Image (cartoon, rainbow, N blue to C red; front, side, top):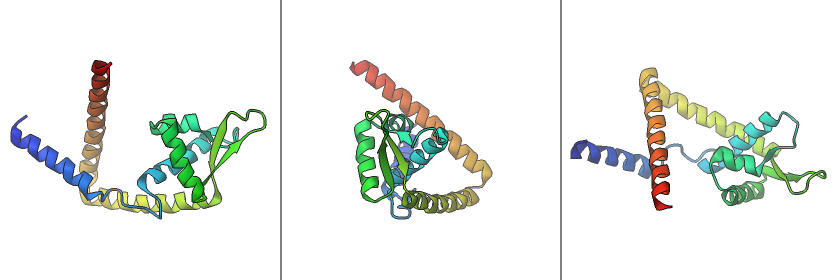
Amino acid sequence: MEQNQKELLWSAMHRLKKSQAWPPRLSGVSRGEFFMLHQVARLERKKDGKAPGGKISDLSAATEMSKPAVSQMLNSLEDKGLVERIMTKSDRRVVYVRLTEKGRERLDATARQMNELLDRVVKELGPEDTEELTRLFIKLYQIMEKMKTETAETSD
């Protein structure tokens, strides 16, 4: 790769990160909180009433976050009244998490806001560029994950 291409790529990545314009703060929750609320709701749907919510270990796997990081995020969401933790009588070691009514309302409002933003991006980019950008984001993620794995293997 030419030095100029490297500089342009670095500059574009830096400007995107620095702008922090995407996605913006949505309906009173941070981007990370929105993502966590979305994952809690997804796990609730997946359990289909067979469990009182999602397990912290499942949230950790779904979000690719450590269990302590998930617990810290859940503490914040719990303080805001958006989620609740539940222990069952049958197994008090397992903690489940589910959305409160307030959490469900916040998630719905935030999801509507996110969809409006994505609709605008797709409209301005057009379908072909949107598809290409998505493909390139996925490819960049795969490259970064491969590099992370290779770095971890060499440091062991």
